[in-house]
Length: 595
Image 1 (cartoon, rainbow, N blue to C red):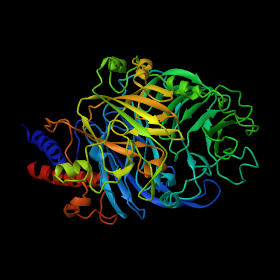
Image 2 (cartoon, rainbow, N blue to C red):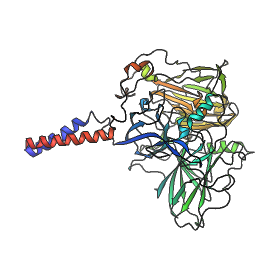
Image 3 (cartoon, one colour):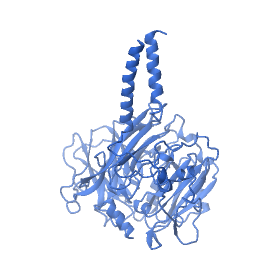
Image 4 (cartoon, rainbow, N blue to C red):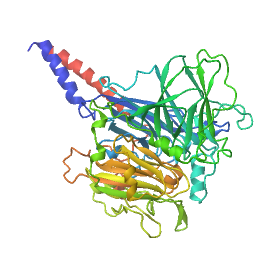
């Protein structure tokens, strides 16, 4: 081999070998993000208050990824309390260590940081991130997470001319610590003070309901173009009806799965849910148009001020928007309408998802169910003098030690594998009771909502098939009306008060995964549990081991190394850049010696 060729060989080999320990992934591209959570002062409803910003932004910045990319997210906690960051709808394949809830991660202490490392394997779609602890999402800290198709995988509609992210949610003028204190005192949070759209308050469509001087959101568009709108409900507990004046919403995707396309004038978006719409700007632009997110399933006349209003502005618009808001659904006397709308959201079984094979090739309706869980939701109850929320009569006690970490180090007594598969006739209690699920099982879960408010329920680590929904009490005969062909697959679903929702879940993702109410008040009061899914023949291929930077707490606090402070920590992205630069300097010196 010539000396120059030998030099290049050494250069390539040295870089490749030296970088292997520093990079956690090899085959697929890796993207790097730094997220700094801090308090800022903002006035979304015209009154200054403390909100949680990410990198100084409220809402936080967009995470843009492509399916199968590896994500390295270095999270800095500049708050005055513990922090965890979770990723709603992102399925951490084989890696619940990165899930960002207390059952899987020890918290990041104030003024310290921790780096998440995970792969968005075989996923596409619209998701979001948010802080999972201490009711913090009620003060912000959320942002969108977009996973796009690889270029070789077609999308089932014409490429849009642009993309627009819209984050909606009910909002309180009190920050999360005050709301938390109210719940701790056994009080109801009461009616929200408003609805935000992209962190901003309502346009003054009504001088009585909306004071002057509130900063509102304006969405700029060009006439004739079609945009993909990714809409997320990141609020506390209120379902919101989303609509755009004089424009059709073509439903295209929800939480990672393409839907059969249908023209809608409005859609109910429940807490924690995400949707994609295709919207063509086909109006005459005689004026701007309203974008509305209004409260649902409440006394709507009393809750008029709980309405988010933004402005859709055409580039050739001839004037400001005026007049009344577009009407909400007129279904007060038709309780079946919202259920029928939810059931009309079907999977596009002919479309490819993250992989070339059609999603419809998975015939979930012909798979034998291995276990059935009926999970009952009831109004909060007093347990030991404290107001608590329950699932099957158990109010979850926040863990001290993450569950798989307890397994790894054989810590006893951190949890019980005795979560009941049916409601039991016994007094409600507080406990750490989780589901002992079977790896590769195919389970049926019925959420029976005997509470007085509509609930959103979420399962981490999975998408599930939403096969049935109705009012009344679920019975065995309810299965006769299940959708066993093209039910939508998603991670968050609504359960109407006095009704039930049934889902199928294929348990192919090992780890410990959170099941919870996405209504923040109910979640905070204990309305959650976990599924523990362990492969009895684990060989390192079906579950990631604990990461090298794992944090320790609870019974394993003695193993803890000091979390890096903001003055001494180097982000993964910066660290790899510096390492590469140093390696290159050394290699050029080596080449000069060889030459």
